[in-house]
Image: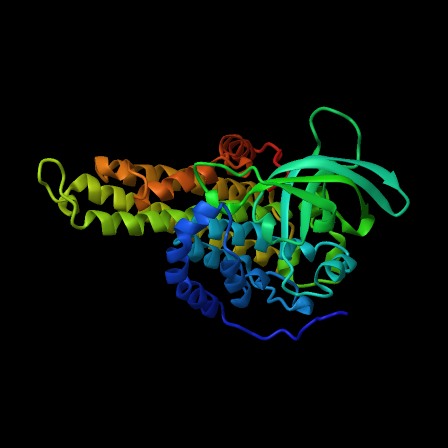
Length: 398
């Protein structure tokens, strides 16, 4: 049975308000989230009830089709209190946007009986296929599937070719697979983002119909089949531009949480020489730098989506320099925020290295964010520099 509901209008500020109202509960459960190595079910239900997962979903499937900046503002607020929860909201919630890029039959499969169904992912192109009538037989193993315990479907990366060696963008696909076709391996033991539950998924001989396969090249060229049905401007944005923020904005919210904790912790702290941290220029400088890095990341994210949607609505192509600049900004935000939070910890005294110190806990999560492949800025800054010198863009996830 199809359960498509009428969409109702909600102002973006209401979503921010709902996120902040969850702060006390999220803070209370933060340690349990780490210990359980997964986001609690009650937290996932609260995120569903608040409508956060639906913010970028098509309206015909009960979503709001909002500018991505508003979704990532909510991710910021949730990550500020519980980084693992913010990460899972971000990387699971962005799949509601990707669903709009596929043939609508895929959405019918996922949401036809339950509009609260969630989709997890792991896009590493490790999956192997063999063609059969109407689709492929799919096999593979994928690490780092965040929030998979709460998902009934998964987007998993692979190719339609059998050749070995480097994978070309044009070959990478995401294959939408139900949980009945995959096994979850409980192997998530880490020093950061413990609560994200980013476990391993294994698929053996699953049939995937063609309409549940989406190409990264289609997403880069903004000609995915779903946009014939889902005509809102946000579904005409480049695939990479929406996805890279899903793995970078949680770090910005986490940096804000670290700054909040740092200011609270150091208000009454005395150094070993009896100098109040609240009057120490080095302590104050660290807070100022962190605040600046956070504000810069948020403003650049807002500017990117407003600008990109402006190109969509004016029916203009996205210039290469715009794509690579915004792509670099997303990764650079993580680097800047990690550096800022490291400085916060360095200015919190020797006892800050103890387990349970909030600044230290936030830094461990920040280091985990930094390890994500999309958050590595070095190749991206070279590519941006080359484009500024007139060379072609070589990053096809921009």
